[in-house]
Each structure stands twice: as structure tokens, then as C-alpha cells.
Image (cartoon, rainbow, N blue to C red; front, side):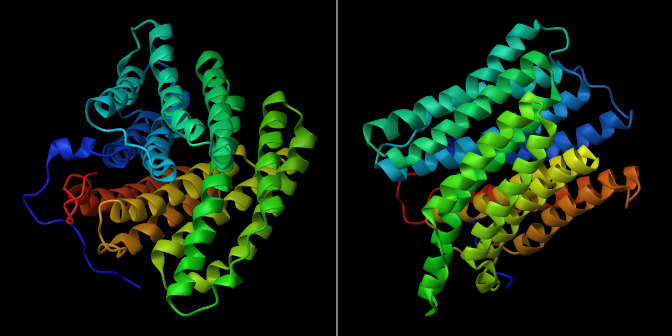
Length: 394
């Protein structure tokens, strides 16, 4: 179902409004980063340009998608959600400007810091996630919300992967970070997706009890991913392959219980289910890589472009409406953007298997990616930079 346009009135946007709530500036900045890093990487790898990068090109690309793009999404979502969960004052104003400045400095240093001391580049980039964990963790601790501690654990492990990556420049740590990104999806996506789905079914006179959540299965899914990460980083290939199969099956069973097909008429919900489906796909592809010799960039792009990027687009499209006091009605073109980002993931995976020629594959995948996030930028910049219609803060 294509929705109507819900952008704010012309002339109401203000730069300072971006720093009224974490999701505003980080969602917009993340989108701009995604729209710049992908084409720059394609041009870099094809020899069209030569950026003065602070690390080798492939590692820069992986770092920026994992710890630049993803970290901004985490900051925007978590620092917004945790204020609601804990009923605490939001991070905004100068404090938010400074936090965003650390994130931005990391991006600039990596892109232009070839002649700078590498320890400086490392220090700035490694500072951001701990600042997010301190901000969110302090609120969670004082609110005694033990349920949220698993998020802090996974974030801490993600940061450990970043430390290993920037200090060792070892792809094992980027793969470990991808597993932790999927663990975050397992935790956060595993909460919001069935909750939103059952709520929608209830509102539309359908059986909300059809959406099944099994806490023991949720916990097993997260711990299987943590064990998978440890095994992957330590190089236990066969064990890792088996764990990938187990983790994939657990996530698939969870998804089946959420009954995503019942939400096919609501794009703000089916995008969540379809995006999380990429998690077991990526895990099965990882098992194929380790046990069957399949190309490693198949599972990594199923995880990164499929699971992570697709879910991020779905979540930010919803959060940006709900937290600015607007109806949960997608702006025009966003359903097409949802299809485009999923197609970008599919094309990139097929390219890894050489079903599509390499140059054509990465080029078309990049164009689909840029269309998807370009549409978000076009439709949501005014929303993110404008005051709430109801006059409330944030």
C-alpha cells in the first residue's frame, strides 16, 4: 500500500532542530554518509579516484559501513529509545553537538588522514561507541532496567570488534562485527517487530495473539550469535559453520512465530520482517562459506546490505515519523525505496556468486542503494529538521 506524503511545511526547517533529539541529526548524517561512501568506494575500487585514506581502501569501506554508518544508526535509535524506556531527559543541545562532532571527526580523519598519525585516527574512531554506551548505560543503570543490559553487552562486544579491526586491520574482526550487528538485530528487532506487529493486528480487529514470542528462544538466539562471533574470530572453521547453521535456524523459527505475512498490507511492518529474514539467509551463507567453500562476500553482503541496511531503513522511516509527532504514514516513494534496498542486497549477493558480472553487479547495487537512501533524504530531511507539529519538544 503506497502512502501519502507527510513532510513538514516549507520554511519550517531549522538547523538547530537537528540537535533537539539524537535521532534527528544521526539519521540524517548516517544517510548522507551512506550516500557518499558507497559511490566513493565504487570509484576508488575502479581506479577513478584516489582518496588519501588513513587505512587501505577495502578496510576503510568495511569500517565506514560497520562503525560509521551502523554506529550513527545505533546512536540515533538507542539514545532516543532509552530516554523513553527510562523516562529521562533526552540528550540534546551542546552535548549532542559534541557527541555528533566525535562521530563526524572519525569520518573525516579516516577519509583524509593518510598523513596523520594512525594512533590519532584510532583514538577518535574508538571513542564514539563508548560514549554511546555511557550515555545509555547510565540511564539504564539508574532506572534498574535489567532487561536492557543485553543491548549493552552486545554493544560492548561490537566495540571490541572495532578495536581489533582498527588495530590489527584483520577482516576476521569485521566479520565478527557483522555477527554482532546481527545480534543487535536479534535483540532490538526481536522486541520491536513482534510488538509493533501484534499492536497493528489488534488495531485492525485481527488476532494479536497470532504473533508468538518465546523468551527462551530469543535468549538462545542471541547467545548463539555471541558464540558464533567468538568461534569466527578464533578461527574454528568447522565449529563456526555448525554454529552458523544453529543460529540461522533459531532466527528462522523466531521469524515464523512473528507471522510476518499477516502484515503484508502495512509497509512499515513488512519491511521489518523482510529485513530480519536476511539474518538467517546470511547465517546459512556463512555456513556455506565455511563448510562448502562459497564466496565470503556473499554472506557478508547478505548481512551488511541485507539485514543491517534494510532494517535500518525500515526503522528510521518509522522512528522519524513517530518521534516527530506525525502519523505513521509513509511519504510517497518510500515503498519503492524499501524494494530498492532489498534488491540492492540481492544483486550484491548474486554478484558474489558470479551470477551477475562483477562491474555490473556492484554498479547496479550501488545505484539501488543510492536510490533507496536518496529517497529517504528527499522525503525526510524536512521532517527531521522541522519542529514537531504538536509543538512538543524533541
